[in-house]
Length: 208
Image 1 (tube, one colour):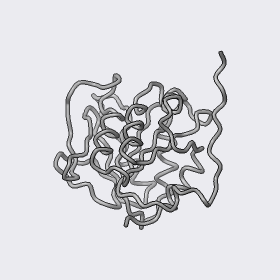
Image 2: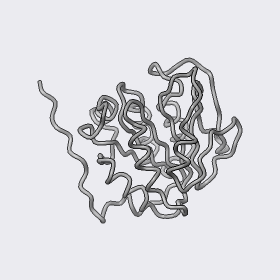
Image 3: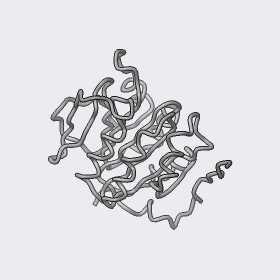
Image 4: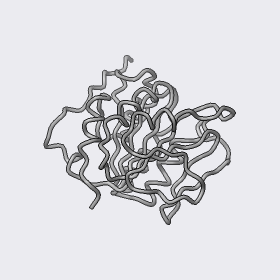
């Protein structure tokens, strides 16, 4: 049976996603996700209030260029956090290659070399699930382009804990498998093309 086309959500100013405050935004992506991350991070204003945590699938044996690359495009400080580092508002925390990045109950960063999840370390599911447990309804999770189903289970957990889940429209993704898996699981609150997602993200209110 052919798959039905998934349409991006309508860009409406009445959308509750632009009136709700969040303490943390978690973003996951794989193949094709870096390009979208560049769009999203470039759109963030210097006064963006929530903390941001990013997991992308990268080869574990190579140094990450992402902190340097993102810092040139983003008005916020971009860093690769150490274990135990506090998750700070208005900062972008990028998972180091070869480590799962998790959120601890005291809102600090944990790094783990536990086994790969969904063939990936860092795992998007691991970040999303740990963040959902700690931040609940104050969490926004965003899943981007990718070639497997990492992130779908984590998004479902985010929604179960009262958080919000955005997914990139598969027909705008270089690798649509990851966002499509989340949508087919019923784990998406909203489905956006990258430009609309960037506009929505930049318009989020300050945390309350």
